[in-house]
Amino acid sequence: MLITGAASGIGRATALRLAQDGAHVVVADINREGGEETVAAIEGKHGAGRAIFAHTDVTSEAAVQDALRNTVLKYGGLDVLVNNAGIAGGAPIEDTSLDMFQRNVDILVTGYFLMARESFKVMKAQGVGGCMVFVGSKNSVAAGKGAAAYSAAKAAEVHMARCLAEEGGAHGIRVNSVLPDAVIRGSSIWDGEWKQARAQQYGITVEELNAFYANRNVLGTEILPEDIAEAIAFLAGPRAAKTTGTMLPVDGGVTNGYLR
Image (cartoon, rainbow, N blue to C red; front, side):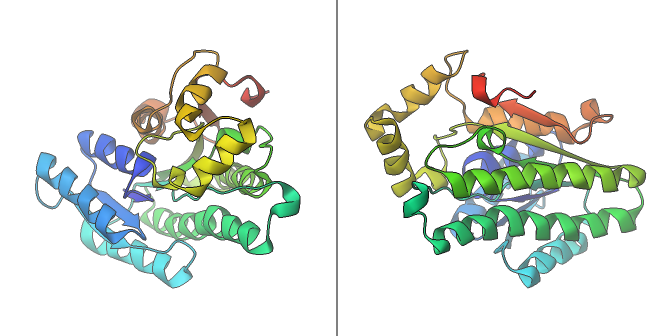
């Protein structure tokens, strides 16, 4: 399996969780140091050869193709793609620069498209089906005030996943999405400016963010990377063998993010 953005946060937790289920994992990330640490953690627990690092810029067509080529050469094929590479950033619309908007699109839309397209080619050629899980966001279905660029890109991701579910069905390729909300702990995309921007949007301090997000969902709970990894493990595994084209929220119950 190949996981993008697996050097930290949700991607790292997913790599560790799926390795626990017996997967051989390709850790694809632009962050070499963090990616190699993820590989070391997997191999330290499950043995040499259970993971490799693929230095990947998901916005580069050539880099994505190299990552898939290395995956096939190392492990003989690809069963599961987890499209997770992320970015965070937002501003009121009048303060959203074209560069900011384009960066969200490049990573969250173009990056997901390139990785899914190349993975689809491999899975189709193998003739034995496959599975893709897109890591969307609560913002994929709920309007994000002060984060129009990010929210629009996240909405594009999950609709792309549904379109690919339509194309993949005849080939046994399932495509589903997980919708997290505010997974702060262990996440590199929550470092720095994004935390400051979200705290300012809600009129609170950075130190209050974790509690704020926990208190706004109906279960009153903080969402952790391991929670998302568990949902991905379900969708990627045999228990979800007859599920495709769906979105699974893991957000503690954010009312305006309910699917309807």
